[in-house]
Image (cartoon, helix red, strand yellow):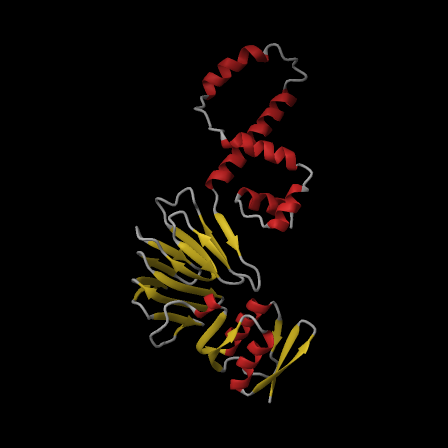
Length: 296
């Protein structure tokens, strides 16, 4: 990981054990720690250009005209760094990323809980949370929202707005799906708003609205290590297999738009592949880290 990325995650308090070890080995580790400690008690003072110049002018007379520029520039550079780091550490977004085959639990500032599925990203601004309860999501997550003001989930496909509820959002490429498990969910997509009650699902694939039956479960199946699908194109099932197992699946001469209904486990690759291929009369073979799907 690059030095800048390590520092960013350190400022976000989002380093894992391996990344923390790499951060501690940075050449300027001690300087960064000292600067962070100083910034914790740093507060920008009221600043007046005229007053500062008047206070500084007598001192400038005693500085050699040939040497005055260098120390001034050095001070200006240090101040710029301090202000930049201070602003970043208090005003930037917190970002949580999951890798392939990884999921995590995120506690938001208002005690809302987010379960983030594999290969997903969640970001929010903790500093402005009281006035702006919103998160940005790329991937899939299950939300258990604390009671309170309106809570918004922003995705590239649409916005989900709720008030104390439980719901799941999945946004991957041209697949956008929102399922309400408790409370009331409002989904805004392409300027239109749809309200979902418990058991309702809003799903769009390649821009087309797909009608679904009511859900009778209380939580998404991926929370217990299983991905489930109802009349979903095979290509989207393949993409989720790749997210959960970190493999590449090839499907030459296979119609990947065929619809699949079923599920697969996240804990056994062969069993997962069989759960998908057998109902579709397909077989598979392994080639290194790749899986090749074949017709029977």
